[in-house]
Length: 83
Image (cartoon, rainbow, N blue to C red; front, side, top):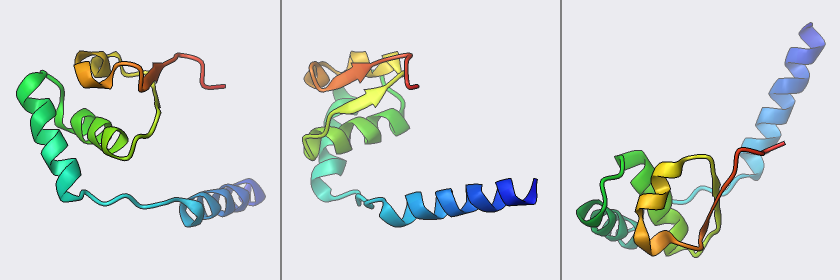
């Protein structure tokens, strides 16, 4: 059991150390404001979508609320299969 916990901690540490941190730049904040003005989407979803839009990322998500963001069509791939 302890070995499993240690292996999990090593995996999490490796993931965090290899991750890129994306700050909330002015362009991301402005895109958040634009999205919130035009769509009824929760703030965390708005931030995630704005980051993806500003940085031209493709977003994989199960969150169908993101379909409400009209500028996001074609850049979001909704899926229930993340295996």
